[in-house]
Image (cartoon, rainbow, N blue to C red; front, side, top):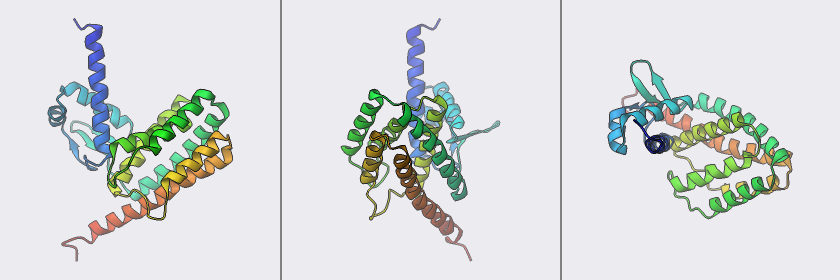
Length: 233
């Protein structure tokens, strides 16, 4: 008979497994379209098949993984057109979440933003997918919306952030030489702390769309290079 301790350990393993697989999908370690073999992942992570299966099921709900009837799981494919739609919907959702957070947020919310900003500012970033920086980056953006009061909005913000990061990792773009992402984060923070909702939303959406434009260009270039690759006449 399973004890509470056993159940707690199982939930912990499942949560850790979910996090590891999600990070591998977002970072591009598991490329789009890759078949995710439960037994192989279980061996690599030194866990049982059940935590892996449950983690993949959860990831399929988030749109990062696709469940195929009788054929297991695959990493979701990507496309420039799908990314454009994702960006538009993300901007709508985050505008609503941020306006509500500015309206409803108290001292704990402000302290959370200040702490998340500090951790992001003090985290170094390499040119490739830097896991620690990515975690701080996500914590910062989630902190902005944390006081919106809607679990649905927060879930969507979390999901869209992960999907966007997967596109950014696969496109291998971290910005441009003329862009100072740190200054953009700082400007957004100051507008939020001043409770200037209109300015904060404008800065946040501009921040997302600058990244989005770079990603769109990179994705289109990748698609064109594949079409005109070796063997193409």
